[in-house]
Length: 499
Image (cartoon, rainbow, N blue to C red; front, top):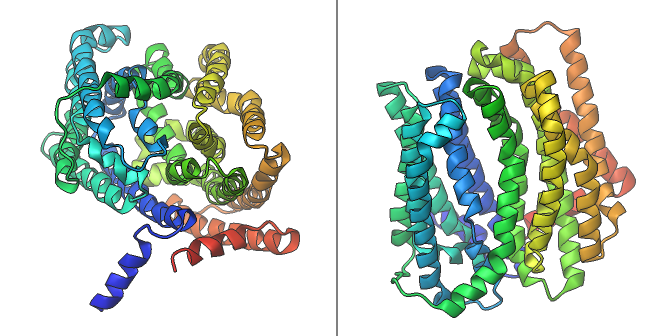
């Protein structure tokens, strides 16, 4: 038994060719995402029964403040180190540590001073102490061991698994434990800070590099020169990914922000996390293939196909089960978010199938494209969000982000990626058409069954999930056999890489 367990572990430790290491790394990243998100969703579900929607809204304001300062000061140092062709980047690590530590201290100081003004802007004075305490998180992150960048650079995601997942467990137990003792918003605050503190300590336990406060101006200049577009991209990313949250919190209220953010997390997380798993392992893999354009194109299409196959049915499945899921799992207090959750599931689908493009931009040393495309998206959202939110509430906000992604962002993303990689645009649309057709039929059948029956929400939810999976997989099998989609070949290659 011990030998079999050891053989199993050896089979999934990243090794072999770039493709083999990418597939095995994907398993570990998948484990990271599934375990981390499972713990986070369980935390949210438990706390949804103990806390009020307003508490989540207040926490959302605090997290928005941290996210804004983080994104406006992000330099992209880790991305620059991963993109480096040299395997050993030790000469950069002390400088990286100094820069990240200074950034964390800067963020904590800014939030300490500006917390009352941020809270006043949102007309929520109770958010002031929350913002100040949450501001300690970036400082803890900045002081972590910079050597952990090797986990991603060398595709050693089994080590990244231990680092990330252990922090998720700490977050869950601290949050639930405190909420049982005192069911207030501070349960969420202490859960986040505890996770950051634990990961900071753990980073020095699981990697033997020991940083020292020394600074190389040439190394810093090189890293920052690569990361300048990462900085621009992160600022724009914050505006278009969390600007809608900030607008809801300001234009409506903290309670509506709680509904909107909760709907977003539950709707976007499954499909988005799967695509992030693939994007996380594909970036270093693409970076290693940047001098081999033919292999890079094949890898891009393969990852696009697998991403779409997995994420499109997840998104449409969430839209289908939302009316039964929310009252059963979260409770009747959360039903006002159902329509927004269904719309945001569509956003999650669109977001997931194009997420892989950002990895290509970074691997080919064109991180500027992410910033430029993001700027277009910001302008489009800004033009629509006020009138649609004023007319339809949080459903209008959700509709805004969906419409902007459908046009102009989706065709624009495809056009730019096609020009950069010399992959024909229609090849991307073809990869999305098959799973969209299968998942669309699945969605239609499930909604039709919903209208025909009058089952209790618990029973409906329990039956809908497996029924949807069977319908989707059956239709996908027929499409692959009849039209040569190729998904079975890709899946066999992935499992074959596990040896």
